[in-house]
Image 1 (cartoon, rainbow, N blue to C red):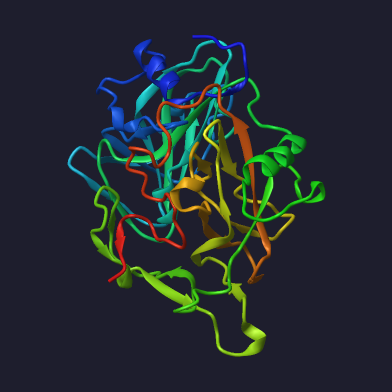
Image 2: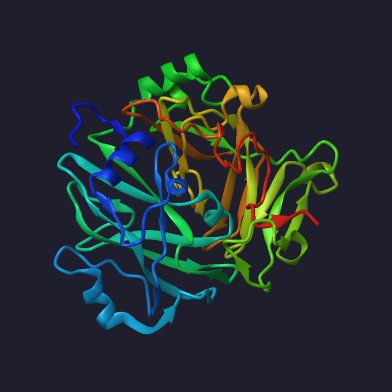
Length: 371
């Protein structure tokens, strides 16, 4: 399969790659893994607890590194707990034989990011995380580091996803501006000076009009979250709600404590047109020493205006580094970079799919109930 144009591959292209064994697995790939502009990647039968994170570099395979770095092996076939503050390498069930001209990138799934599970894709001979070079042929691995909650996983659990691209798919700042005017990527007016390597996204700390809720802070000492059991965990055991503080000087402000994990929400509603996909830039030192998004992929159709008329908020997975940092309402915290699709996907986010976060506001991952 070879394409003359640049863009991200749509669901129908991913199906074709599976049919051609460019994406393959010993265990049949399920239709539910195929998303509008990505494919969910499944954990294999075992995980390796390693001493530290690593990249193999251009001379080594991941298996060569595991021979040196692995401390012990964990059987995932019957399910196992990956402990917080530990690093694991898991061979994935899917492997690749990418045709000429195709490359790929990995990213945690939305639910993975909202659990503060730091997950990155690794390839043989890789010199960058999350990047699959053009025409790569070989296995895929996930580095998994639960940072706040220990998580129960098993063979077949899906924590990460893969977006495949032909050529250079990202659009220019000028194209971002035109698309903003035509499609309202975010529900606020922007001029050319505000669009720089993507569309700016700010944080909403105004509070819910009825409750004053602005977000959630993860509790450090909690139980285990089963990643394959939606709605199985009561929020109160894992999260502390955060509210607007009383008093004029504190309205619309939140001090991020180093090492703490927060779920917040964007001030803007976000819209991804069906012929585009988007990715949130996760870490930008120009706006502060904090990370605002682990799971960066936004699918075609996310926040479609027909869902509720205004699009959907972007949930922000926030962790401050090194020093306390003051966030204020409306402060820019990240950027959405849009890219073209090769074709309109046969599958559209929120249309006939189990899309957990369409038309969302401030929302925890699907694993929690608000009890």
